[in-house]
Image (tube, rainbow, N blue to C red):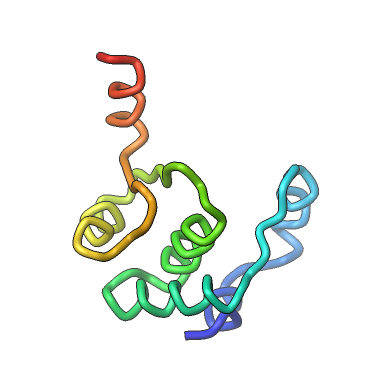
Amino acid sequence: MSCQSCLIWVDWNKCKHLYAAASERIVLTMEAEQRAAFFHQHGLKPFDSLHLALAETSGVDIFLTTDDHLLRAAKKMDVKIRVAHPVFWFMEVMNL
């Protein structure tokens, strides 16, 4: 899987306003591309694979998602960051 195979589904014109609003930019590195390929080979969809790989290689503290498939798959893989459902994470943070 290459970066181009993930990005082919993204309509850049529809994303320009989101990109302009971002205060940080994440650079696609070879490491991120390799991790995305690993995640894709282990059952994640291409865009989910890229998203998780970029979060992981960028050093985020936690990756929040409501995607049950992604949550289950991440538990079975060697993901170097925490992947959690936002509601459960919020309850944990708030000691609920």
